Amino acid sequence: MASPLREICPRDVRFARHLGDGGFGTVDLVHVRGVMYARKQIRPEMRTARSSAQLTTETLLAASLSHPHIVAVHFVVRDGGEVVAALLGYAEMGSLSAVIHRDPEMSMPDKMKVGLGTAQALEHMHSLTPPVCHFDIKPCNILVDASGTPRLSDFGLSREIILACRGKLGTPGFSAPEVAVNRGSYEALPTDVYSFGCV
View 1 (spheres, one colour):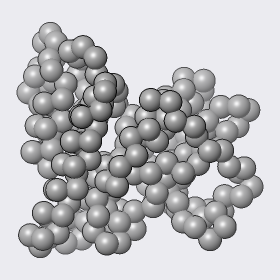
View 2 (cartoon, one colour):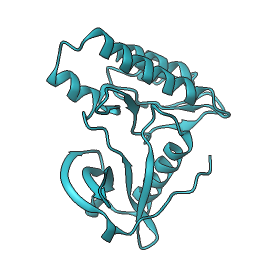
View 3 (cartoon, one colour):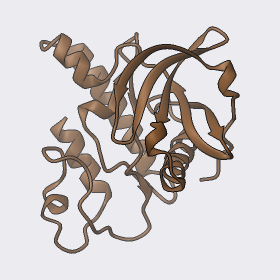
């Protein structure tokens, strides 16, 4: 899974506007020498060795996947040697949730494009050796660019799968029943398929 993360100096990153907030970080639109990126950044008050390690693991995994329908990782920003931000490909239309909110009557061709692209991203992840399970497929984690092309994002719960899984992962309403009840072990990859079907 090793994939080198290109570093960029914070002084080269110019803030454009705020895009949203996550569990322990913020997402901003930034530009580097005229190119726009989405910066996923740990909030200063949340910066710990653990949060930096989590962001590093998530970013390394996402960077290793390399697929047209998976959000691209372009740079990381370090502070004191620890990763505190990642610069990702910018999806102009935002999340699928935002797209649906703006246009509840999405056309069938647009729905097919998003569905097929997301399915191809999952197929790619699941066919790797070892396979990678996303564990949190939902509209908020599917980004859409200006051409309507989907990009799967947010790999904070994702992991390589070698054995059956345990534990409650994902988002209620999109998690498979075997994950929601949290009784014993379960096969991981089918849970992504179930969540994709909910979307």
